[in-house]
Length: 171
Image 1: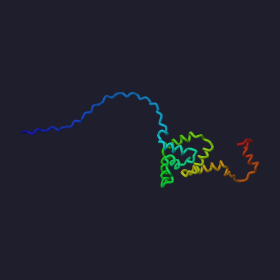
Image 2: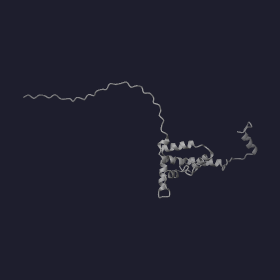
Image 3: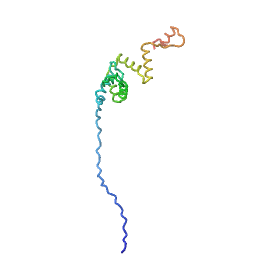
Image 4: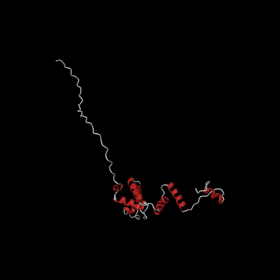
């Protein structure tokens, strides 16, 4: 018996059917949809927190007190203050919370008591000492507590002449 040679088998690759290509229709620009207002992204307690934080009441600018009031936390219980402090910090670093706080502050009319409270907030905060120093300088200037000192001596006539300028008009 003669041995027959076996032909080497090659595996055929499975053929994939190509899908007929269709031309895509040019896409039209979609109209921009209105994004949800920041307020709708927040729950009731978060909105209350923002309102307490921005109102003229005693909670203004105080994250811990605002948090305790919004979430009805008794700060006299053990570790409640530290817990409220941590939670208020988390809320005040949330983008949506900050956006809503900014919305509330924009709605508030800029009047002297409001600006005074903002200035007081900057003075009493301990996060940004540059802003704190600037606020203290502004407070002192408003209250005329510090006057500018000039080196040298000037007579009254010289001071008036310099203030009037060369053409005789006030500068």
